[in-house]
Image 1 (spheres, rainbow, N blue to C red):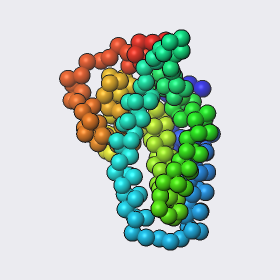
Image 2: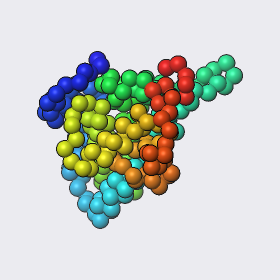
Image 3: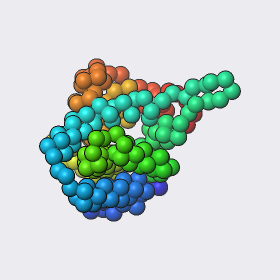
Image 4: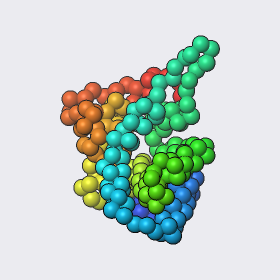
Length: 218
């Protein structure tokens, strides 16, 4: 479904559409289960405050790396085979039609490995179960925030706060000005500034491949 410009597109209307898609539901269910388990396990310690703060602080860099290295992956040939992952293919489609809501979200197929991987990391990579669950709660909460922010930017919702206006402009420049810059979605001027992809937009030429990544057929 490609949306058409709608006036009076409220957060309530946006929310109704948001929850019709698999990835927000899958992430929300994981978040709810992780939060419930975290409360049941107890064993609260100072690291349960420090870890979420670290996850939040590093999330823009994580977001940037995923966007650059995976979503903007250029198809590569290895012998007779072409390495072109689903996430990269779907992201090229998203750039080709930024208003097609189905393409805004994480492809539902990735939930079958992304969620189990996150759960496995939470269970085996931390010195205690409670801390692992704290990590999983933090990660899924940020995952939901990412999906919601990205979705909202691509709808007809009009920004009402300066923070959201800044985030909205940042991502719109990535889609409609130049796809080689402005890679963060839930923040602006954070990882992009740190990693050199936050130029003065007036100095950046409009890219001919912003809607056709790498100039390849989607």
